[in-house]
Amino acid sequence: MDVVLPFAAALVSLRLAADLLQRWRTRRTPELLAWSGSLAAFAAASAALAWGAAAGWDDRAFRAYYLFGGLLTAPLLGAGSLLRARIALAAPTALVYVGLAVGVAIAVPIDPAVAGGAIPDAAEHLAFVPARALAVAGNVAGTVAALAVAATGLRRRPVGNSLIVGGVAVAAVGSALAGLGAGGGSVFTIVAATLLYAGFVSRR
Image 1 (tube, one colour):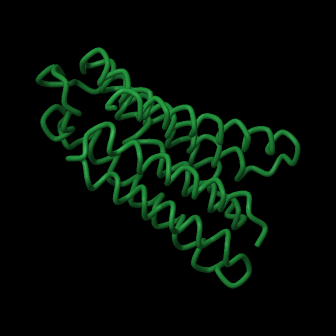
Image 2 (cartoon, one colour):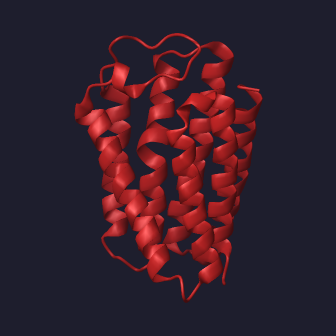
């Protein structure tokens, strides 16, 4: 199950990301592109979990998992929400952040090397600055942005914004319950991705 469930989470998230990308191609609204990127990051992080569970964790799997799960998912979600609220600086800020996150994930030293079958604890392998500090800043900013925009738009789109809040909450709970392992955490990923997608596309 520790392989099957992350793989399923990757497929579900990727399918939802592809649908949002198709909607963006039709409408060209920038928030759909950012939200598609967020769900694609969910998919890539889940794929890295499946990789680690199937073949054992190493530095490559950990870098992929940390980049997509630790550095990109929440910030892209928040960027999409800010773009929905017509915050002009959201797009260039998100582009700069993504470039910085990719550079950090590729270049940051991992010490000691990652090995074994359990999901690695970032605190045991990465210095706080820059990788973990960037993850904290990005996740806090992205989550606050998503929740703030959802809260301010609750009267106008009660269903959609409530689903987004629910998706953020489920994702946060899944991250907090790391002891569930790859399989248990992936259940939260599937639920969170589905709720977020439903909130993104809802017009109510």
